[in-house]
Length: 114
Length: 109
Image 1 (tube, helix red, strand yellow):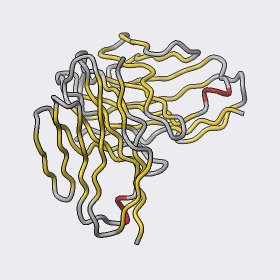
Image 2: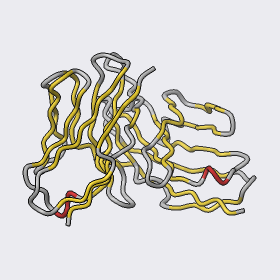
Image 3: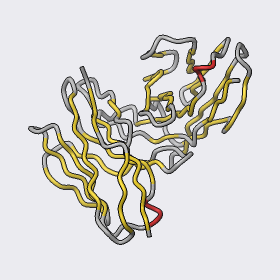
Image 4: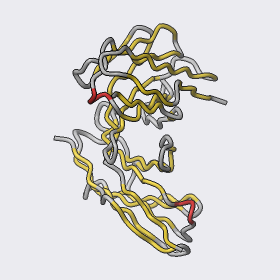
């Protein structure tokens, strides 16, 4: 069966510090991978998605970046965090060969920028 | 533009039935998803409709009308554990998901 791991679960970072959130998927190959952010009381905002190694599409211009160094690894980074980067970050995957994209989410990373 | 509308909050009584509505406007359409999200947790998949009609899964059912751009999630025999947010999402012509802000469902004893 497929599993998705995301870490760290929570972190508190000062403004201007770097960020690295990591996500890995097991039990499947060539998945579509996604990073979402969810602000309190708001819908999911797609930040990045990837259909393959080194292929990253950015949906929202911001100070975040994503990388996919391996087929089942997706990393969200920032060089300098802003207060507005606080939120609940969710990694997700869907089968790469399916158009009807049922997403399976990781447990999430709650980021507080102070 | 693309948009999803669903009520912000609903309250229902344990054992009762509740219907959560969702209307959507997308560029193309490739299906409508419902997810459940408990507070502080990740969303989990509940249902997917791509054709008009009702899909039933135990206590949960989901309905779709493509001509009206409308869907609803029906929860029967409500239990306290059903207290959660319910997210509606439509898949557009590029298979990208457009998400609603979610409906917070409060179940009272």
